[in-house]
Image (cartoon, rainbow, N blue to C red; front, top):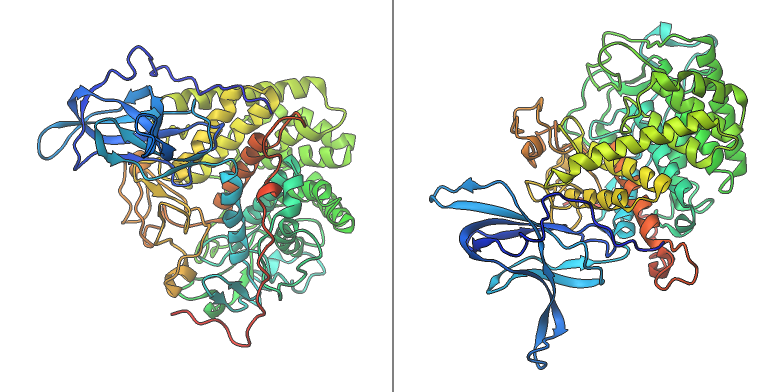
Length: 620
């Protein structure tokens, strides 16, 4: 793809002002805040210099420590780029008295891959950690984020070879109905073993499982070529390993469980959980009885949408499975067609031992039905689904994707993949997506952390990732570089460009999360790699998290359940964003264009998994 060399428009980057700041550096206080995984050479590149005090001119450079110094060729190290796009952030007064400043530094115009430092002229002791400009940082980061889904598997043994972490098969009796009235006619019991734990509490939900699978399939559908070579490094004893590619194998673990949750009449039960919250135990030691909770039209519609995507996405990986999915999707839609009003079966124990994916206020399942209709039309081409889409498009606002309104996924897929689109509907959808992206750009331009959020609520990290996904959809529809540049900046937020300097994904470079609210990790006193936690929450429900501090309302504490729990949807949203950014920047539109063409150029053969030992690996 042609590099348009366009940065995000920033009103405050006045070049007459840049480079003329009158500031003095305090060696004890001034620090750099950068992205711990680095930056894509063609993407947005922003860093923050914190706690400088005012009184003299300041010049800031990118420094290459291995380049020959042009003035003294026998020495290594040279300035390679002067950073002139600088914004002075809000000042604060330290306890000692002087006023301190922080500077936002934009060096997006520099595009040469390599390893660099940011340095201040005349103050060599003030420098950043090494910064990598790497074409495939998104691809490299995607791998542990997707591998985390395997660690959330339920009903089977799970092994992490590198750190010898292990848990035995768990929850092998997931089959009881929470209430006799929730059984469909002719059903006496269900086998719902398997799937993924949603978070750290071992419950399994149709909403989070289906949306997670849909996101993983959507990133493959955007560009399937790299995923033929995507390796999750399963152990040899992984059931079904090697029959299809690793990405589809992992997706199928979620889809298979989803099918076990479908009733004979087409509806889907909502979740599997115990009546009490699990104690701090490993999953195999959670011995309480677990139950099937009643159906809802919301969950039925979400499953229908996900299976419709699978009908398209599995065609090449497993045609038979593709047919199985479209049949399940249409069976779920037939149930919805017979029940026009939203409905959910509830009991008094719905919240006694697990959470719930239920939108507050008036029950409304139209966003989910619209998503299902869009995906079913794209998969089957049947007119009844497009007619539903046209009729109900005005009933659902075009918003950032969330479990409360996931319709953006279906609307985008309709524009990208559906044949014989309704012209008026397509025009309306496209306009709504561009308007949404422009609103995000406006907020990003005023936000030093570039999140595009106007408030930090529950699972704010997922919201940030979904902002990036909406921007990438707008980029694909319009080709406007400002959307892609903004999406690439959002990634830096997860890796240190935030008020806490945190890497919000466990086990990755930088100041990463060490105390996630996840029972297995708490009990084992180990941290698995690749889990994105919920992130800052301005109105937390726990007593540990600081309140009312916006993006600073975060603490790395296992007891801070408002902000530090990893969940399926967090990882799914981040995986999708990383994947589409990787495809966008690294797939050349011109075959003759120089440079790497695909992640395969960087892919090494996977290490051969070791045989499972007779006894579980011990955890010290």
